[in-house]
Length: 414
Ligand SMILES: Cc1ncc(COP(=O)(O)O)c(C=O)c1O
Image 1 (cartoon, rainbow, N blue to C red):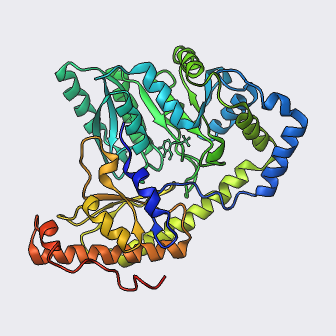
Image 2 (cartoon, rainbow, N blue to C red; image 1 turned 120 degrees about the vertical axis):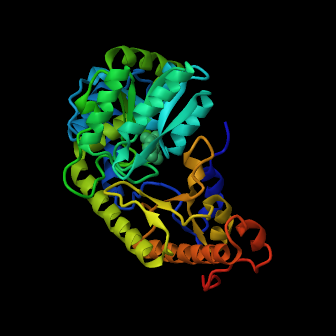
């Protein structure tokens, strides 16, 4: 296990003078704390002894029923018996990986992929094989090719891990056609699909695209979470899995935690029962949309020629591709000196790829701060491309030592 780039960054990026476009923390400023407070107060008064006890390893039945209602919004029909409550969807992924993977087994992941998932796969000593994406998500032709490639080596692919909605970090979503094509390939190859969907209800346009699990019950394991639609502090997520897998999940959950925290589960159930949670998700969506718009406008105004980025229709992230020759990892200390932070693309690959990319998050800062962040980033990139043009490709690192250290105009104004 190694520290992720995000973790190492947090200490610096959290300083108030730095505009952090790095962390992907949900923005719960709009959550009405008085309402949540009185729901929790009522919970403790009326049912505190049960809520503060151990509970069932699979999770509370009332919550599992409510989870089925939440999943219906994305076209999923499920029985509460097939839901296992977890400590965030992160624990769901960890349990699924423990159940299926032995050291050396192959897991297919999009390129790029969620840094927290790569950490889980690394801890289980899995080999990650990346599968190319484009602006419509995972490419079915690349999936077929990756499967062929792994089979040729005699290794076992245990599952495909994917994030079809508002991808972290790529910011793109799979079209319905793509989902169908990927599931067709999975059926033919007898491949299990792990669908990670924490952002699905945070789309900015129209209705959610049907979840992969709504199209195929038997070979999709679905991971859900209340972290982005309610609050991450309760650490409540879930796994919806085919029956045989669910039985193993409960055993794995019991050996990991005995049971997921009862208090958090009762709290989420009470919130869902007593608050207009659908209305609250709409409020979150509008807030994130405003921030997405600020970031896209900032990128259009501030990025130098040769930079491109994805246009997310929901979620928290934009994936930026830098002009050839620039290295987001090497550039990060200079960006932080210029008081803007991002996550270098290399964090999202298991194989060291990604240095021409960066992930920008728009979820947390205000629109004004986002615009300031892209302005600072634009200046850093302009400087870096200037170095590259003057000294040629490959010389950027060496020649930079001969130049004065980068300092953003206005760097001492705050
Ligand atoms: C794609 C993805 N999966 C899973 C998680 C973990 O979420 P949870 O808080 O439910 O553990 C995150 C959190 O950022 C995420 O982006």
